[in-house]
Length: 603
Image (tube, rainbow, N blue to C red; front, side):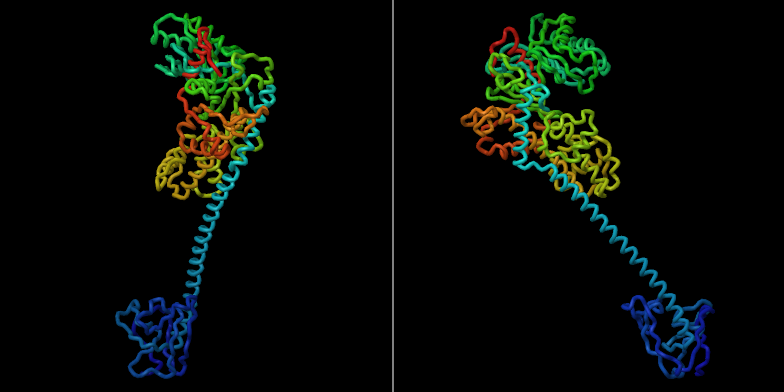
C-alpha cells in the first residue's frame, strides 16, 4: 500500500485535513489536558467521543503500517460516521502528521473549553461555599443577639436583693413626702378590712376602662359569699370624650336598672366604687381625679370628686344608693384576701397592668403626721408600676419600648413585668434578629409593626412542649406572617419568650419581697423602721391578674425567685393566695365595712 495514498473511509469536514506520512515521520505526541486524571487510549473501548480533548498517551509507530492497514487521513477520523458517506473506515491507530496537527488544534480548543468549564464549576462551588458561610455567619449573629439579650436580662439572686433594697428605699421616700419618690405611696384612708363577719347585700361598680361592671354581692357570717351577680356594660365612645355628668348618668342608670331587676325594693344600700384611674383620696369614700387614662379624655372631670359626681348622678335617677368606699382594684383585692385570711397584709395585681398595696402603720406615714385611724394602720396604694432603680436590668429593647409609648420615662417597672408590654419586648428582639440575620427570611417587615405579638401569644409560644413546636409554627405563620420557619428558628423564638417571661416574674418577686422587708417579714429579723422582730410570722399576699393566674410558667418563675431571695425556711411562711374578682367583690365588702351600720373591721 502506498504511504501517500489517501484514505477514503468517511466524509469529514473540509476544514480538517489529515494526510498519511511515512512511518519514519511519525512521533509520539502527548496532548495536554486540565484533567490529568482522565486519560484514555484511542484504542480503548472506554474512550469517549471527547477523547481528543483529553490527554491521550499513545505510541506513534516509527515504521510504515503493514499492507492492508489504513492510515488516518483527511477523509477518515477514527471509526466515526462522517456525513456524506455511509462506509466505515476501520482505523488501527496509525496517525499522519496532518492528522496530528488537526488533533493538536482540537486539543487546544478542548483545553479552552475544559478550562472554561472548570472555571465555571469553581465559581459555582465558590458561590455555594460563600453562601453557606454567609448563612452560618448570619445565624451566629442571631445567636449572639440572643446571648446578649439574655445577659442583659439576667436576674441573679444578688441583683434581685439589690432591687429589693431599692424598693424599700423608695417606699420610705414616698411615705416621707409627696413627690419624694417615683413611688407615689398614695393614702387610701382604708383603715379597716373585712373580717369575715360581714352580712347582708351590697353593690359595687367597677369602672376601669371603656367597659364597666355592676355587681350584687350577698355575704354571710364566716367568710361566706352566698351569691354574686354581675352585669357588664360597655361605655359608648362618645361618652369617653363628653362631660363628667354624661358618663356618670350612664353608669347610674345602668346600676338603677340592675338593682330594680335584682331586688325591686327601695332600700338604702351601700355601694363600693372601684375607680381604676389616678385619684388623690381625701377620705375612704371620696377622692379627686388626677388624670384620665385608658382612652378617656373628659377634661372637665380633672380635679373633681368622682364619688360626689356619682352620688349626684344616682340621686338624679332616684336610686337610694350611696358610695361608702372608693377604692382601686388592688385595694379591693387586698380586702377580699383579708376577708378569707386575716394574715393577708398586701395585694399584688399582675395582669395587663400591675400595682401593689399593703397595710402600713400610720406612724410610718411621715407625710401625714398626726393622722389618726381606728386601727393604727392604713392601706397604702403604692402605684409600684412607676418604680425605678439603676439595679433594674434594662436593655436597649426596653429603651425602644419606652420611646414608642405615650408615657415615656414613666411606669418603668410596669413596662418590664406587666402583660401589656411583654409581648412587645419579645417582638423588638425578634425584629432586630430579622434585620441582622436571615433566620426569618424576608419577614422583617411583618415584625416591624408595634404590638403585633401579644403577651397571650408569647405565653402560648413559651408553653408549647410539642416535639416539633407546632403551636409556635402556627403562631409565626398566622400572626407574624413568618412561613416555614425551621425548627431551630422556632426554638430561638421560644428562648426569647422565655427570657422575657423569666425576667418579668423574678422582678415581680423582688417587688413582693420589698414589701415584706418593709414590714419586717422577710426573715431578716429587723423591720425597715429599725425595730427588732421575732421569728417570721405567717404572711399572706393576695394576688390577682391574668399574667399570674393564666400563665403557669410565669407563676413558677415567680415562686422560684421568692425562694431564692428569702431562703427556703422563710419562703415557707409566705403564701401567695389567688383571689377571684377582688375589684368587684372586694369593693362590695369594703362598702359593708365602711357603711354607717357596719360591724367593726380590722387591720
